Length: 100
Image (cartoon, rainbow, N blue to C red):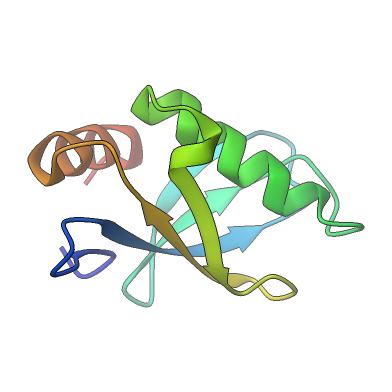
């Protein structure tokens, strides 16, 4: 699964393609080796980034502090560091939510 990579430190890096100002919030498939995440928030003042992190934290059952936006603060392509969850469980949850 190219959109989710495990680091040597045991953390996960999730690659997202974000679509802000959508009519609903949720995954809408795979786009260019990334998970495509539709968000209702506009890409203004970090609102879409905040919604993306909150959505993922809730989906994975983690506190928001376990997710860190490491790249793509002002772009559609984002990389998010995830800690505190096993890689297998994270993969299963993300695959189910994305329908892949």
